[in-house]
Image (tube, rainbow, N blue to C red; front, top):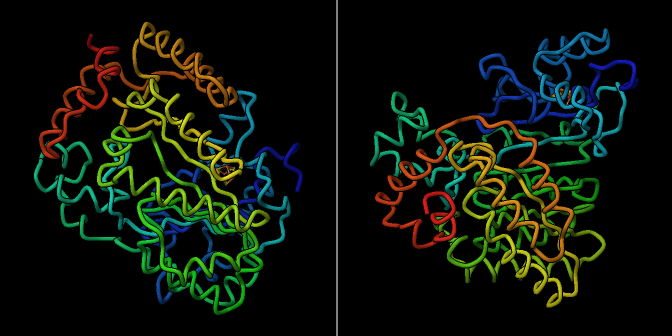
Length: 395
Ligand code: SF4
């Protein structure tokens, strides 16, 4: 595969399928097309049909082989034009080959989730359903006002249960996000199928979990059979700040569950990796030092290395740090530059604050209006939980 001279060719089109929450399929999570264009897995249309024989995939591959620009791949092209690495040219997960073989599946397990994180929304969490039913304002914000009946859909990604032994026979990597995967009956059935087919040993599994409960022992035993397991624990802060941002969680329980996974890594050091995945927003950026402190204590307690990944929040826009004023960004930079340890992550944040282009000019107003509104519905008070943020932006 000539990814250098052919600027359009990409291994994801030849090796991968992203099976989204509504069972529709596209080559990867970054590929941008309209939902209505995508093929959908159902009892009459298998993933095998779609991946190996559909005009959707075949046309895409033909265009790539001819070196034609693919509109859906715009994000990768933009990154490459800016001199950055893109998913197209940096994937270490997929072999750079044009042999058509389904080796990588990324999937959303369904909307079913026991949390309603402030950074999330009803598109991928049923936890938001009740808030939207109580508030036309929120229903409007999330564009559900004219389709409230859709809040009852896509609790589980049905496509996962329909995947066959043949379709998974060459599978090497499975990446799963939510909702909450360990609450998804379709995902758990899929894991059970992989276990029964004796395929776990061929597969690296990457799971994003909300760290609010330990799955049943049956699934822990299945995880031990995978070639390798990467658990991404979604934790955004410590104590009451995490409970607020990840509404529905209880910090004491989160710590216990995190300890369970850290022990799981200690017991399976060669095959298990556990990392913290933190969504960085205006709410938690000033107190990241506390999260790092907690992490270092856990590393010592369990004698393991625990990596941490920052996902810089883009949406909702009023929570995105790069949408605040230059003055605020300078103050934020000062705070995070003083965090001891883990400089790699903090210097990336500083670089982002210097370079990211704002996507709204009303973040200061919207932060207060929307957060106050959600607080009323949830009987919460963000000003009590994040006094440092209130002081920075409105003080
Ligand atoms: S070029 Fe980028 S967007 Fe297009 S299929 Fe590859 S990874 Fe996905």
